[in-house]
Image 1 (cartoon, one colour):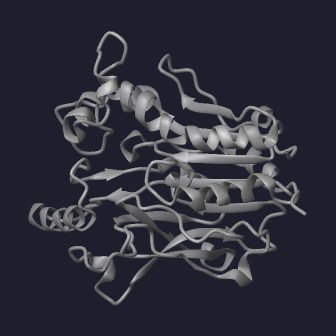
Image 2 (image 1 turned 90 degrees about the horizontal axis):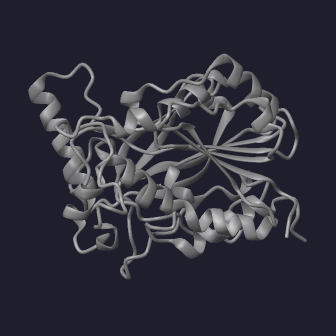
Length: 326
């Protein structure tokens, strides 16, 4: 058992997510009833409308947040402290920002970037100041974790947009995803404000081995100074995972700790047209960038629902027990 204090911060605004018009399929979460329809017979235990909100709120509470339960429970057991779970904006509009009160109470903060780009969540200057102070303390760890940005089509004609989004859709092959769905505006703004701009690109299908499990990661062991990937072989098989593209100063300040192989048997994606067979799956700050450690990876690194769970649990253990293992 360690003395770590862990917080999980869901960066979404619930009113923005739950208020998205159901008549528009792009750039929103599915409603619970849509998930039940598309994935039947899964989630039939959530079919009673008297007990479970069948809208987007029901999806957030009974599917999305449940995905992180295994990590929250494991981290709580390993630290002997309950994991603090915070939503950025609650249904009543109350906002919980990343301020000193929150950040002074933890040493491990995981920002789940499942906020729709449509909602335009942005880190404030006060939050950036508090996060810089958090990263200024040796031993602290901040993981900023947006999800995919599928179907990005700014500046394209209607015809080109259709072709581009169709290519994205056929490549990842997930029937539950609309033509355009982007997440992580808060995470992007936080990274840019910290001077290490990184953007989550695309939704790439990860490769598998013959038994259907994830292919091993390409890990740069020479960069794993904190042994975060000690004993870790894979992440997960979520069907659409982003490439984390370093921009500007981030190219020199953020290191690529792990790459994940792309399923090249899937329908072609423009990202692989120039010969790329991997995407950058986990970044970390260089040794002299912050006193603490900054990681950038996908939000599903903390989810137990997309395969690779045994290896992910080892990753979670390494995060929570860093500096405390024999």
